[in-house]
Image 1: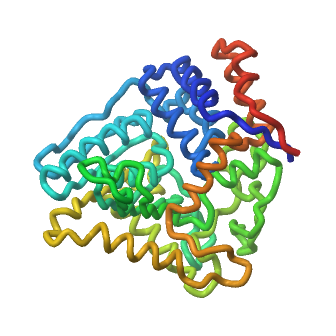
Image 2: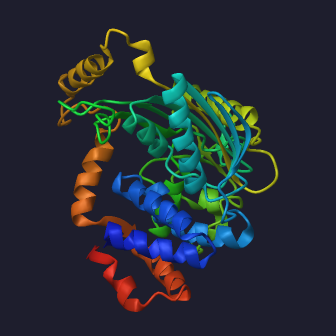
Length: 383
């Protein structure tokens, strides 16, 4: 299936205009658009521009409520409990992550419990925000109202895709001062506890393709890579409905020995990101909403000898210098694939299934965007 390559800046401007047309403030629209494009640049297309279509309709059906910053339910010292009020997830989450960063700087530690957010995007983005400020962070996320994943040993949808992210900052070589971590080669672990993020199935559906491996399980226990197992007859609709398919995504590890580990992590995301924040769990009714429990730590408070930066560098450089397997160019650490993707995609544009782009272009025209602006977003076409 053919793809187009989009210019990052032009694509962000286009999405911002579309979101503002749907009722977001310019600041909200810009934050959400930049985040989506940033996910594509980082190589995470599942959380990128393909979601413009879903967000467009989510505003219409109440899944995203524009023009809200969220409200603090508890704000004391290092503790923040926030009701995101179903606001644009990337906007609300970034605003409160910034506040949590300030609290961690002031107290050495901060805990942010965020409830009832619309889809908050690529979780690694918030770990990168903390790392740029020199903070270690851990983020546990659930998706209440969304059952997509079968627990290990089962075939019934009981869990959300439940992402986890952990960030460890690495200072820029030779840099000094408070901003020495900004733009550093941080270690950013970021993954869904599902065998595959739902957004990757969405991308495959837009390409009218199957997954390159069996990520789904049918009610009879057979496995498949066909997105129709999740989306059913809506698989090729503008916004496929992931609630109507007969099957489920498997937790990471699949049916292999040790496959219970992904299912166990997903359960912890439900309990920490969902129950503890007050968001609810995947099997609850109501609008689909994210809960996130974030812990931010200032390593300088635990490092009176000043050895943290050098220790991180020594460990990371040692991993990269270790002997690779046959056929592997080099050993990478978490965060390296994203850095490589950014360099290439900023230069060449990021890929988008042609079918998805055609749908976005049609919605952009509904928002009053001139064809010249839409056409200028495309950098090239690939077979």
